[in-house]
Image (cartoon, rainbow, N blue to C red; front, side):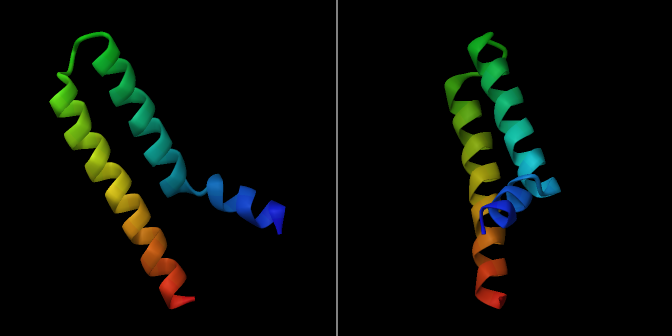
Length: 60
């Protein structure tokens, strides 16, 4: 059970989501992005990720 959850975490979509979150967080901290821009991008990425996960769970 735990290995299955870890395998899902290492899914390509998960890695992309985590990478984008880290990149935009660093850009925001360095002042390259405004907090509003970071929030917009972060919210979009997270909403898409969880929307896809919810739809996937619904189909299973």
